[in-house]
Length: 265
Image 1 (cartoon, one colour):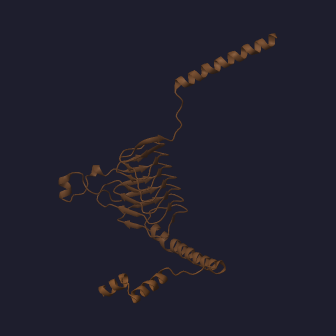
Image 2 (spheres, rainbow, N blue to C red):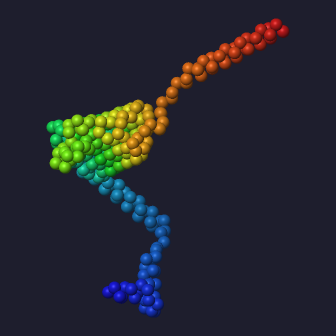
């Protein structure tokens, strides 16, 4: 069989060339797409697809996810994938939370009876995120969490080499709650480590590894993440204000002198 394939692929024989020609014609064959015909076909396909996705989301994916939630508010929505939930914990959701794509939620059983995940109002979490809860992870309101973000309050293994060798779980002190405050934007593929608090209004750039607290209204980037910008308008230094005051005073004096001169004339 291999010899036949090599013959057809490389020989200059008439039969081999004919077979290669037919194969090329088949692989490059195409049909015209007259719009009066193909546009209705496309619209019918898209309508059927949207109807299928709507049904899958409303009647399968959302009820499945909500059955895992201890509490959820109005307008909680998922995508048309079933989220992967491992272990048991308390999921507390505010209003209008959007959990798009497929997200992996992992709840540990060793550190507390009910590990807790809280997500505030109007927060959106993108596809392929992974949230690992040993004790507590809190995500605030109006947060934007892009695809592939990894948030964990426990690494899952102890830092001590001997404990790892014995297969022990992390020490209790190594399981530290994570807090993402309100209106935070976590860029794609960023990673939030145990014990971190990301301050209100901050931005974590794509691919950043956050191992320390992020101050409010700050942009961080890198591995490990470092502050690269502030999102707050800083007040001008005092000497600038003083200089501006002196300049205004000189302008007023000059203006007053001109006014007196004009009156005298």
